[in-house]
Image (cartoon, rainbow, N blue to C red; front, side):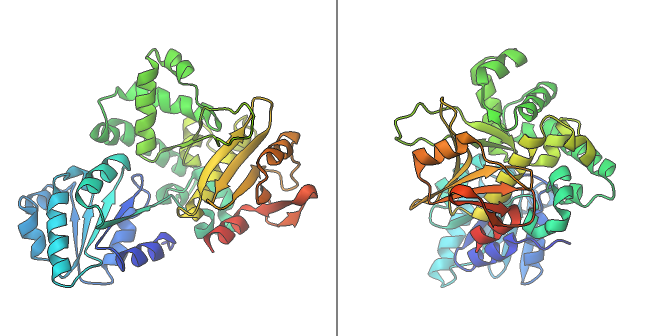
Length: 385
């Protein structure tokens, strides 16, 4: 079992909040992590996909009050949206009795629905943590190529062979299309949604063009927006917003789109091996998305990610906005990176506190113009502290 860095964060949140919600896509390891925490203390685990556990919660307030002295883990919470009001009542009762932390651990596979439900009922009573697939710090630099090719879902990453890993991802995609997505959103024909997901894979790292996608799918732009919103809310797709700064330039206003797991990206693009990936036209875009997701996993809300591009060609792959300062990050797979003129022009526009290029090697060194060339794992460790 790979030790998840998220575990320390969850323990800290449980020590300060009465309830904690772990959000993340299916199969990312939420249940495994929750059960590991539950094993360390008196606990009750309820899987709301289980009919037997659903029956126990016919009167949730009555049943849960019988276990008030335990950590209660509620898995697949979207299947019981009415339970939040009961949790609020129990939390408030326990607060009055002197217990204020570590009562409920809630697991959800979608961001928007869970945030809406809990935000209405548990305001001031819940903390949130997003669980990412495995990242480079967790698997180690030596396994970086496998992590990039196979993605960070534990079963995919730990498969015995690349072929078995790819088969797992094919089954994962099929299950999402046929069973999971219909639970969260409007009824969408599975084959159409697969086509849309595959189109996004080909668009990965590029600007969102809803009109073009709509023409290719033979639907309207509003329908495309609905599909995209759903995949973003299910934490399967990242919509990276453009940086809007008052720099007197014509800025690109469309977001960039990335599939959040490169393993799923490679399966949709039919890239089964590292050799196939190294010869594929999407090589650079795939690496860029891999770097962005690993950095996002290290950020833990410390900064907001953007990209910057002007109509004149100035461009920065990733901007991290820490509030008090911004960092400009270019992403290159080559271990001896060369920076484009567009990056330097963009830095002149924005005057970032730090200028960096994340490369595919394992060393950190200086380039001309005050630019730091950094290995991905070194930057992750610096950000995470």
